Amino acid sequence: MILFIPRIAITSGEPAGIGPDICVLLAQHDISADITVIGDANLLAQRAQQLGVDVTIQAYEATETSQKHHKNRLKVLHIPTATTVRAGSLNPTNSPYVLNTLTCAIDGCTSGAFDAIVTAPVHKGVINDAGIAFTGHTEFLAEHTQTKNVVMMLVGGQGKNKLRVALATIHLALKDVPNAITKENLETTIRILHTDLIQKFGLANPRILVAGLNPHAGEDGYLGREEIETINPVLNKLREQGMQLIGALPADTLFTPKYLNHADCVLTMYHDQGLPVLKHSSFGGGVNVTLGLPIIRTSVDHGTALDLAGTGNIEIGSMQAALNLAIELVHKSQTKKVNELT
Image (cartoon, rainbow, N blue to C red; front, side, top):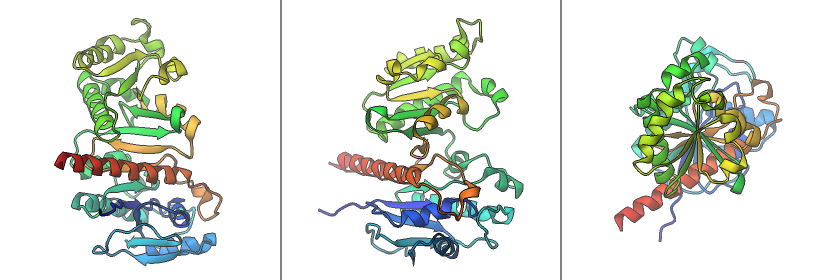
């Protein structure tokens, strides 16, 4: 029997941030996958030297047989930065480079060269400063895989404390959220979430808690009517089709053991309704997962931390968690494919 070894592409993120640091520090650990970092090989070597890390940079070969990662080696698919990088100092000139690494990883997954993508953090502001409209990884991945609708979900914690939080809207100003929560959009989001919890996470009949939009889930309409007019009708429709949906629930009491102990995932209506809870419980070990894509993508749960770049004063727990989840999802996908053939 041939041992299946997942091939994971890791994009190194904003070059002035901690993305390159994370990549070289990751190389010191045992990893049960064949990892390839997509980024500037010279930058990674320079950052390793700056951190005092002994890592051998190895050029990526597309024809190479998949093999588990060797400690203290880093296989790199070289994409050069546009200009010299100084740790902690953003430069819009290098913004196209950041997007080039992402495009390369996406192309590698769609062509079958890689089984999944794990992304280090990027800096949205400097990309926009370069004149490139960019709202985030999630939207960029959707556009470049021609995926009409995607869902952002974060995963954190272990065992009984594991928490999955998905978002009905992603990177929107708070004032724009109510208009974005339509019956059509919410139904699409829940269908994607439900499908991927089954197909990618292996949950046979997932139980999903759904938060209301307003305080106290609208208080019977006195604090807003979105629950009555939009959210609850969608939930009732999908319940009739067999989905286990609980809500709409007040967000301030939803994240308690009474509810979480009997749920597989929480769907919140907007970014800062759900993610502060998850990040409070598992910051530095959380994982961002993009649902609805034709490829597997996970990411760290933190930003570029420019002030820490090149200092060595960082933790790589979130990257390790993102990588481990990507490996797990690839194995589940592979098992599913094998079962379908037998």
